[in-house]
Length: 304
Image 1 (cartoon, rainbow, N blue to C red):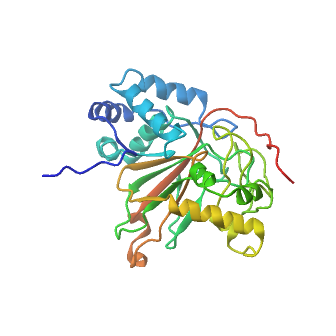
Image 2 (image 1 turned 90 degrees about the horizontal axis):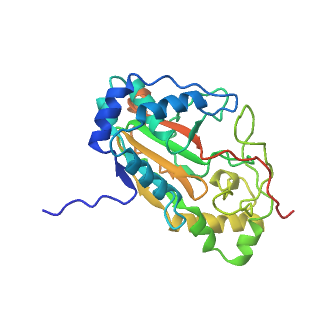
Image 3 (image 1 turned 90 degrees about the vertical axis):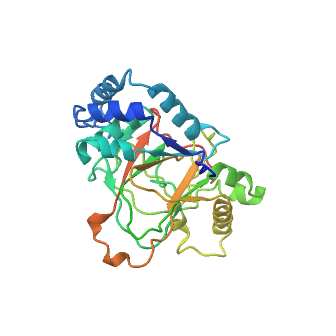
């Protein structure tokens, strides 16, 4: 019998770690946030204290960091956490355990003042186009993470990722140069914390190295734009390269997609037919933002 090949971006939580973390989950404190929207240092310290010494934890976090941050990599990872959610005493305890794990990778951030730390994603039957989140800010979240608590019963809606830096490298010089100009606008900006200041219009390429800067791309900014505009043509060229390098995969129960927004765009295919008959509470995808390290939200130098 031929064994199934596990994609290199999927990481299974070690069984020893699942058992220990599920046992400790009920005792993990509820998260508290600071005025900057990030998980408070006190809560993070308590999480780290509970996790300290758990078997194979260092190996697990090292693997995650390598997959997320290696410049030659894809910039994302899918953690298989179904065993942890199933072993936890409650859905709430399981979510705290996932949050504690994430706090070892980066600091959880609530960017939207009126939303919870873990934001339920609304059900959009159409495609969720390729993008990075909070694209119109000087300091977008370093990472996004999406946890599938209850998968879509009718299937479809595969997740999409694309390594955006490689896509930029495949562009011609003329298109890449146009993307450095602040000519792009997307959405509104209000009641946000921890993401710097509003930046509109913004450039797609901010001139910073990948560890610090972003490729501020979202398909939605192109929807009503003049297709003959050379700046829009350059953005469409980038979109084509993103599609060429695109990965697609389903998220099952307990799958946690983490994407490094410095390296990776993400999106979702359209959901399958018959979704209107599926009760809203039968599917649940939660999203959280993460800040990799403290940064000053200064606007980079850009071409006018």
